[in-house]
Image 1 (cartoon, rainbow over the protein chains, first blue to last red):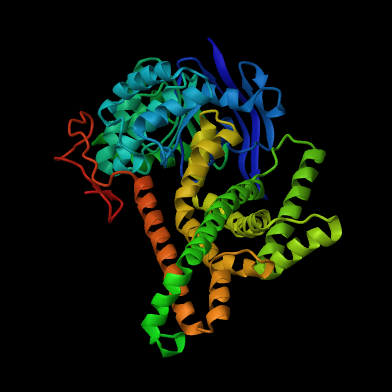
Image 2: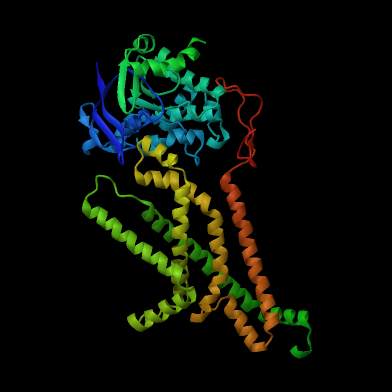
Length: 248
Length: 266
């Protein structure tokens, strides 16, 4: 299988606080990985290190075998290949929906305006936001913003998409629309790395589940292994809080 | 009828009749200096504010870091000195200093433009810094995450939003500049305040001349503040934007309309 990302012995400290301790894992083409765990376990930091929004303190992150941490590859080029969707959407407030989806294409990938527009429309249709191309972000609901953010990330044709708790800032009634979009994406073969508190998504959509606790990967496996036959105490304890809601 | 026999209003009218053209010229000079210098001050302010808020790249060497630190230090000194001393003295210092030390005789216009824009730039630098900080970090993270460089992020995403946020302060600066050009009378710039002094000196009608000049200043500043407010609303875009109703994924109930007051939809 084609290995896109390989994280080796990754360490991240903030001051004296060791947030990530010796993380090892790989992302293969077509993988849909859910990273679960309680708050403060380092999930988001791991994602931000992979996208280089945080500087890792130690270890290596290999992108197709090249270490991204030693400065040998162009950071901006790398980021176009590893897209990111944020908890707080981070749409550009000074651009319309269409502008948000075109800006990176025209300025980073140097696509022509027409080409960028065509692709932007294609992905906006995919997330059901083609009606809103002229709206500014402030005119959209949270769920709509997040769908546009997903279209914006997709328009860059990334190899991997990182999702940092994409539904955590949303009202409960809007979570569904974003998860629907992500489900469609997963089924279309997109490689995804999702930090989430949506256990149903992790169990039903992802191919692999990573459970993190205290900056370490505590347990990793298929959804069936993690949710139905967890091996570690901490995994069981964490999941016991969710099993009730999952049965509903 | 001599001036001594006139009442207050007659004197004001007399001043307008006799010196109307000079007052108009003075007002025009004041406006040109204020507008041009506010603009140049903004350019300086954006440049300085941009450098003050930039962090060295993590891979950059000790030389680049040192260079950035030195430039920042110089700019901080510039901001502090020009904010911390009266513009009237700065005008005297630059105007007479240039001729005494370098033998350069700055004309009225170039002296005025240099002094006021450099002074405005010092204030604007801090304003722009505040404006950049007011744009939430998520905006630049969003831009960096799709591969935009630091420069592109600043130019296309952060600065336009910072500009919108500091528009009220730019307006403030323009109005302050309209009034503060009067300190240029110390180096002989013939602007509105200089005209006032000439009139009052010629006619000995201080009260009436001051009244006329004050009214003119107020008309200038008030017009500017209204125009700037209009530009601000233009920048915000339409406030009653009707959005589509057929979002197939979300539960929409009727038309969603942007609410200007609350800044959200209802």
